[in-house]
Each structure stands twice: as C-alpha cells, then as structure tokens.
Image (cartoon, rainbow, N blue to C red):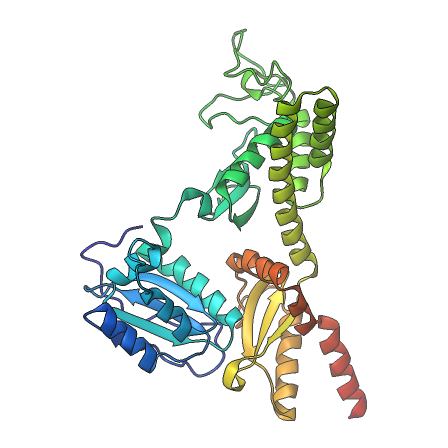
Length: 393
C-alpha cells in the first residue's frame, strides 16, 4: 500500500492499549540534512527500548522500526556509504524522526508489529522480496477443500496457520501436502463434484491435469471420489496444520530412502527438499498448537525505570497488560484482577480483548527466548495465593 500525495500528514502513533503506565508521549526531531538529523539523534534520543518512525518532507510516515536501544539503532542509519542499502534509502527520504519509549524489548516488538499492521508505512510493506513477506497457509475453498497460501488470514478458511516467514518454503510445503493428501490444487473456478451427486446428462468428464491418473489427487473435477473419502483427507490435512499429524514426514522419508537405495540420487535430492519444507511447516504448526494448549499465564516482564508489566496471555494470545504490583495493596488488587480475567474466558463487557494477531508473535518470542518462560505465572499460582490469603484472614 503506497502512500499518496493527498494522504494526511502523520500526527502521532495513537493509543497503545498494552502500555499500562502513563503514556510517555511521542518525541520528534527534524533536520534538513543527514548531518543535522544525526546530530539531533545523538543529542536527544535516549538509550532505551522503543519504537521510531521516519517522516518524509510532506510529513507522511514512511517507516516504523523498533529497538532495545533507540539511540544506537537510529545512529546506525547514518553510517557512511550506505546509500544503496535500505537504511540509506530510508534516510534519504527522511526529514524528521519520531519515537516513543517502551518499557522493554518485548513491549517495543509488540508495538512495532501493531503499528505496521495498522498504518502500513511504505518502506515496511514495499520493496521487500516476496519470500520475506509474511504468508499464511490455509485450508479451505469448498466444496472440495485444498491447501493454499495467502498474504493475510482468509476468513473463509476452515483452518490456517501464520503469519509465517518464508513464502517459497510455504508454497513448496503446500504443493507437497496437497499431493500427499490427494487434495486438488486447481483453480476455484473449476467445476467440482462427487460420485454420489446425480448428473442430468451422462457426460464424460476430463481432468484438467494428470494428478488423478498418477494417484496424487482424488479427482473431484471428474467426480472421481465420494465426498466422504475426500473429507477424510481434508481432516488429515487439518490435523497436520494443528500439529497433530506427522504422517506426511514419514512418507517422504520412506520415499527418499527408497530413491537413494535405487541410486536415484536426483530424485532423492528433490524429496529431501520436499521433506525440509513440510518439516519446517510442521514445526511451526506444532509451536502454535503448543502455545494454544499451554500458553495461558501471566508473563512478567521487567522494564526500565521500574515500568514492569504483566502481560495476560491466554492460549497464546495477549488479552491485556497491567502494571506489575510493587506493594502489598497493589498485589492484592492485581491478583484479584488476574483471577477475574482467568474466570472470564469470553470478554463481552470486560476490559480484556482477545488479539488473534498476537498468537504468532507470542509463539515466535518464546521459541527464540525459551528462558523467558521462567518469568511466567501459571493460573494455579493465583488460585493458591488467593486461597492462602483467605485462610490467613
């Protein structure tokens, strides 16, 4: 989504519902040259976590980023001889820099992703190779569902995982899985049907490809299977996306071993690449399933200047954030609020909001920062604390 000349100038980043302290306010510096901007960065930008934005001469927000140390990150944009790099191109289009502090790297990361999602600055969403853009693997498109990739969540899909990084791997995994599960990969405009459906005229149908002949598709385009048989394969594919079915991995491993034993080394190499693609997708699916099943807790994150935050995470999704308690009275109040949150799985009329877009972010964060799991408080902790306080009273 490219900015247009009639786009309104940028004003501020807007409300941050996951910042439980008094809003720090957005700061701004300007400069007519690279040297002036660099000098302003060194003088005014603090060494704290946060998000930053680049504004063009018209005042439009063209890029959003984050860092554990804002000053150091912004100084890196002014390295000599970087005109051909993305950082250099961004600075050449920048006349002002804005920033907003955050209590931690985790908070800055969440804020950055939220801003990119809502604002879509030009340099964040354009000029990025397709293989690096987020992608979703979906299952849907009735009446004969298939696996396919999309650039955003498909509300019509029966199942999906994402966002994922790696479009080429995702597309290859989808191609391999459609073949293994014998699901179609043809256009949605292709007429489809099943053996139990009656035809007005006895017309011989012809497949649009050879996949039915080589037994890698059940052939709904020629009514080559029953609905029940096709839906059984769809169910297996859905279980794979849920991280509950690794049969495709075993099948490819056997095929690869057989090809190697028969000295069909080129075929074995192709199968190895197929295997790597579906193993990668299986790991991501397993990560997300693990998060949905086990990531219900309060994540305690220490912040600079004492701005510690408790993130309320249910089934891998962030549903709220509160300031971590620092006194006995605050602890009692915070524990009461957390217990209320745990009791209210559906949030109609409450201050908590399910955020499906945070599932992949939370999953990725704990996959790359597994030691951080020790800073989580399980629901049992709040029940035990509440019971012990009642007994003491």
